[in-house]
Amino acid sequence: MEATAAKALIDQGIDEIERVIVGKRDIIRLTITTFLANGHVLFEDVPGVGKTTLAQTLAKVFAGSYHRIQFTPDLLPGDITGVSIYNRHANSFEFQQGPIFATFVLADEINRATPRTQSALLEAMGERKVTLDGTTYPLDGNFFVLATQNPSDYEGTYPLPEAQMDRFLMRLSIGYPDKPAELAMLNLADQSATPPTAHEVITAEQVRELKEQVQKVRFADSLLDYLLSITTATRQDQRIRLGVSPRGSLALAAAARAYALTQGRGFVLAEDIQRLTPLVLGHRLILQPGIQLTSDQVLADLLQQIPVPLTR
Image (cartoon, rainbow, N blue to C red):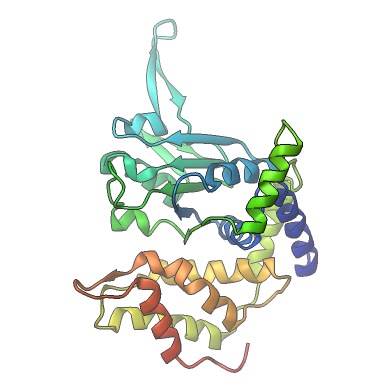
């Protein structure tokens, strides 16, 4: 599949999702970018802006199974991964799969669960498998977690540990719709008692082809050096207590390749790296106490200081 054909197919998927999610084309593209890069996405947002609907619609358009896990303080790890139940007739234990066994998994309000339960996702997100009682169970080959996180000042929230934050390739925010988009939503609600639904556009086989094409996107040596200059700068900046790990560098490179493909290109540009840097690296930084800046502001400052290579 050529890059132009891949973009056309991805745009068809975005168009179909936009029938349901109005006015968020850029966020939809970035979510698909994360999916094609074999990553996971964390949505940090206020309730009611369409995160659940986006996850459901994405599963329909990309022909995948879908499960939603509502994270609550009493949720246990086995409620996510599954449990072994004794079968009296067979005189043996049988594994009952949990809701994590799906293509698209919505981890809703992930920071309302205890850290112990949050950690149940770590192996699944990192290795796409679940181990229980010494037996390993593989997850779907296109396993994709879309987690939502309420703002940390909301009542009853637990901060996500650094190790789990690092498992998310991107942190995104859908945000409130602009006035024209919200007006269009109201008009759709008035015109029909049945809300619009999306249909399958991209098959599992086409997803495989798209992911293979992502791996073929060219990354010039000068741009790899530019990317490493950015991640290295986060480890040396005095305002940052914990910089980006090598996993973060790999994540940014994978995201840049996938994003370039969604733009119809078979090569990465410096603009791709700059566009994705705050989305991929922002949640991986821990700033020094007392710094009156956000991680995104610090990254923007670093991007201004690092020379951009002239070649692709």
